[in-house]
Image 1 (spheres, rainbow, N blue to C red):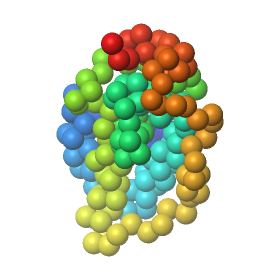
Image 2 (image 1 turned 90 degrees about the vertical axis):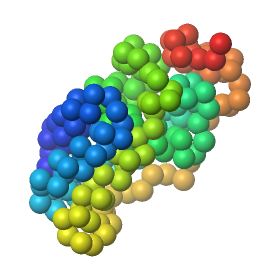
Image 3 (image 1 turned 120 degrees about the vertical axis):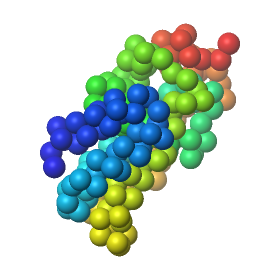
Image 4 (image 1 turned 135 degrees about the vertical axis):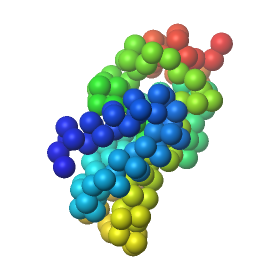
Length: 173
């Protein structure tokens, strides 16, 4: 599976789910069940490599602004959600985290930002197809600490300065 096919699967299932993250995950599993087990593992590698690329202080700051705080778990689930938004939003946010303010049409803190189930979709599909747990993907794990320069997530001024467009649109009032 190449990168284009990976993103096509993400996009088509997201569009069919009409923005519902749980429905997106269910549709993603259904779509992956149409593939052979090796292709599901390829999908998992694409997902995991992007998940690891998103382990960055700036993206954690973005999650903190959008969710009004982001624990370790919340940031993990946010990275899955960000992948689920598709290539343009994912790559655009990695390139310029503050640009997410323009890339997102809307953001509902109660519905958006948590893609936990998306992160499990390939594992679930693989297990349903084969009856066994997915093997190690053979890709590098994320670093012990996020990439980039740490941010004080408790300092609203620092967040507003680092992400002025996001803060203006989604920050605390």
